[in-house]
Image (cartoon, rainbow, N blue to C red; front, side):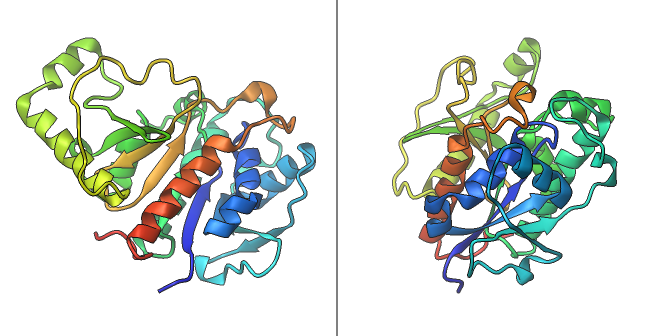
Length: 277
């Protein structure tokens, strides 16, 4: 059994704040004390963000998670090279960025499935760039479901803020489709998945209230989002790649740090063992 949980941090949209907050989270003393972080991304992109944002980050680029070493100050980066990003400007939308963000997340998920890391946290993606890449994407829950071979109807989004947790019965649907999906069977499946997730997060006897319209509204960047129902622990953070402040060093990493710490605590309660497949 390992001494600390290993958390893969997928670097998110390379033209946005994802690389910046990923590096800041990986360097955060609370994160390094609680777990062993590995940033998954393009090393060249991370170095450009570090230089632009005045982040004192020395990278240890590795080809395998097994090669990671946390004995010094360096940030372990599992290299996921994306040659199309060499001339990428901060704050721009592009197909290359969209492909890269999902490549980083997909690689991190593969590490979790293989038991090489215990959980995944994804930095913000940019859905305009993903659309420009021609990739069908309607949020991380369905993406994680496909990547893990899980039925998409069994995977849900859980928003977390302090001790408050909200699970969506539907996600990214039209009003008509959402109403059609509110059936006794579907609500029972959501409750069962929520119960399992809460117990995994340390709530011994969950109490679950059913109700509410559009709990996703008004989040204002405060929530860390868990994808529940898949065989891996996966979390993303508040929407928005914040192109307007990319490369300026102004991005706040607190939501990403909270997500990493939350999953670290969950895995410690599970005895640092990978989730069952």
